[in-house]
Length: 231
Image (cartoon, rainbow, N blue to C red; front, side, top):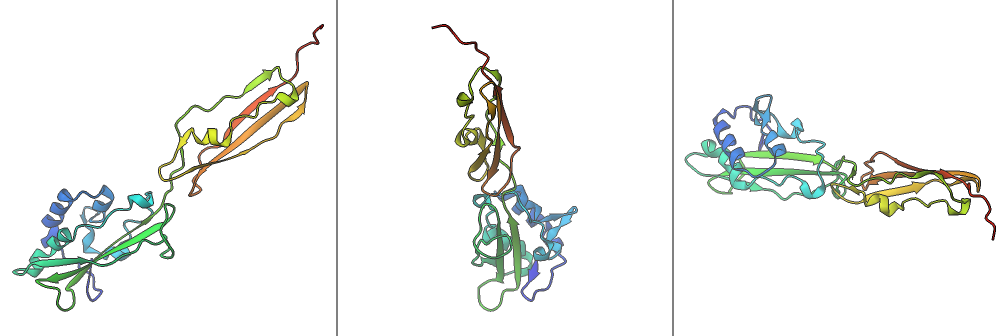
């Protein structure tokens, strides 16, 4: 936690119990709670902005941790402001790409929540600042949920009857993704002739963030093994 002059607050012993109360009452995820804990002690005893304890979170844009309630943050400064009441004011924030530029996406996002801390009223400069940073993006590949077709061998089929194999859409339907779309690219061409042919179709599966699942290969082989029939 930094104060208004950019100095690091290194003594938050008085706030231990209040931080624990905040954690118990808060509905935020365990990732948020981790911001306040470090090596069995208070993360608040160090500069949160430089600590970067919340980087590379595997979360979609819609799942970015929400800021603490202003009242929860203010409650950490009851002793500092006594006998007056502390006031925490969350500043405006934007969600950018993980590098701090552009707009945030499922693949890359970053946000900084800054709270100005006042005692009694909002006149003058804040007595402290609380800065909480998060950044991350989707790093999880699509997950297979269905059964992959098995192909076939020794198929009694002519070359022009070689199976086309599942479409890209049919393979995509076998997967789910935690953030967005499942994108499939199909390749593979038959080789051989009527008497002996084979084909292996290769399916590459990725989400919108280029997280790739294992490739799928489906092979068919065969040839004409049926003798001419007398009309």
